[in-house]
Image 1: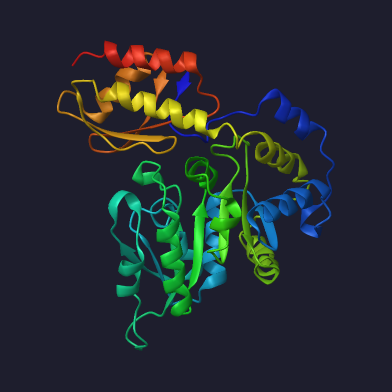
Image 2: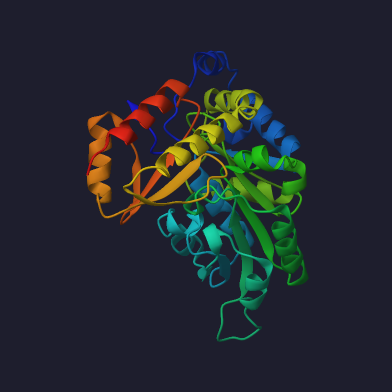
Length: 339
């Protein structure tokens, strides 16, 4: 099976499994799992933050961040297609009791001027603006990458208005692989950063929330309330350490394959539009020759799996388990499709 639904479908390599099986473990709720502690320290050092906390998912790290930075009744500014709003089951409203201000922006990105224009005045009739959230890379923007200058301008607006700034960096290392900028440089702009180990980096489970020591100490309490306190989590943390040490440098291979697929799709008569490809996410629009259901069904007959993002919209995501030989098979299948 060739699986292009997401970069979450990867399975641990033999070397990663060996690292997991040999991990030293303890009880992480008591903070005495040595492998979890090593992972948290390693990630914090990579991103220049004082501390980190290991969690089961990026949804949990994002929602802990929202909870840390807001009080019930506050408002969060984010793009209307951001993962924290669109794909996390209404968790901001349900868990933290916040309102959201949803902004538009090209390829899922928001900017400093739009944010500044939507900061609420000190008025009892309006929720208090408390937090700005951005996603980099932007999933529903086709893996688009924020320019550092844009993020720096947003950080300046946040500081001037006493707002907290959170980065959903689930695919941050994909962005950095393209820009060449350092994780330290990016991270310094934000109060908290979430990174995912189970997407492009290939770990089976896990995300990290990073911030200062006071925030991370509070995050442990929120994680516990959410049911995220794990015990001998070092077996999972070992996979995360392996991912950070071995799977970042190869991310551009995924990007190259995604761009190649885009070049193939652009030649197909049944394709209406291919969004620009910057990283490993490829979104395209079908013409009238196929519905998205028909297109996915035809691919599935060839044992190729992809994902619909809505009417006539399809997403391919390349990853470390998607090889060059698979790429050639997908190309052959795309050429063979006849309306």
